[in-house]
Amino acid sequence: MKEKVMEALKQVFYPSKTHSVIKEGIIDDVEVKGSKVLVKIKTEEKNQGVIDMLKRSIPAALKRIEGIEDVELEIEKVVEEKEKVANIRYVIATTSGKGGVGKSTVSVNLAISLAKLGFKTGLLDADIYGPNIPTMMGIEGSPVQVDKEHKDKILPMEKYGVKILSIGNMVPKDAAIIWRGPLIHSAIKQFLEDVTWGDLDFLVVDLPPGTGDAQISLTDATKVSGGIIVITPQHVAMSDAAKANDFFKKLKIPVLGVVENMSYFVCPNCGTKTEIFSHGGGKKFAAENSLPFLGEIPIDLEVREGGDKGTPVVVKNPDSPVSKAFEDAARNIVEKIKVLNS
Image (cartoon, rainbow, N blue to C red; front, side, top):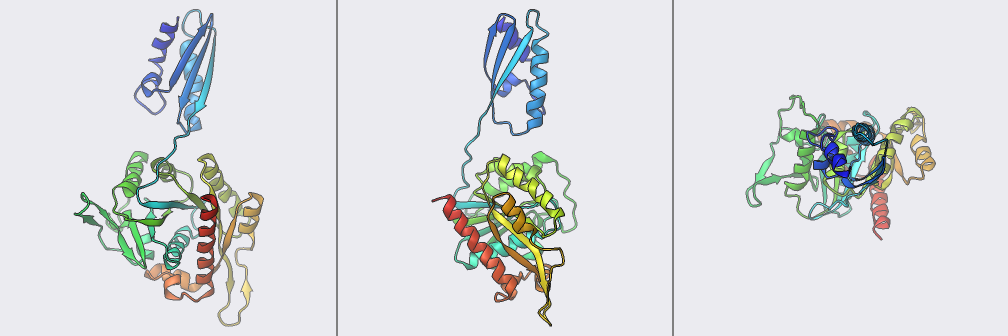
């Protein structure tokens, strides 16, 4: 009977693949006792939808065998220990539950702040569909170069003490990037492994909003040291940030903390503080989820101007309150990393 079960499993296709569950290598053991079958599965599959499909398709296929009445699946999820990218000490992922919260602005200014603190820092623009880092870092229009001395790897650009890589420097400025998941996965893997990053203390990865292909590809490709959640103050933003937090939880990535961007506005003429988008949402979200709060970043005209002109505020006006806020957040990140690795 066991032979019949194994033959039937050869006809069960693994979801999203063109081969069977046998060829995929997830069948660890099969036990047949009378009319009952126990199928033991070991898998690294992260997609719960795929697991649910296997729970339906395998019993359905085996119950078609005469004499089989009951099928039980015992699924063991194997957590693969990811290797770090060579010569990169910490990979930090910056994300948000939705767009429009200033995530890329935070990534840019945090990366420069880390470099100003004396750390060797890189900035990877993983927002494949909307790469804004070239504009914000003032390298728009500069084509990526090949490193002839290191097997034709990609040579990152360097500005403001930060090594930078973005798909935005590899395609025409207004070209739409119409890629499916596998292409995004390949690109991010290449951005990590086929780039002459050199020795880095921190690689800040600016992820796109949400919890899609780029996020999963990053975690598949390397060990992520920690995540940063960017949120705006208003209550409605908290539910979006919760999705980002849940994403990090499910992939067992420690959250270094929450940054509240656009926290408040201080009138440059009268000094009046105005909480345009309400206030305290980031701190409240952090407290409710037992997460570190990294700091409040005020709204400042120089932040927008610096992003548009390629001179980030921490470079243009390092002594301003907003620059100090970014520097404090960077120091907090360093402290959290030290605690996690102590």
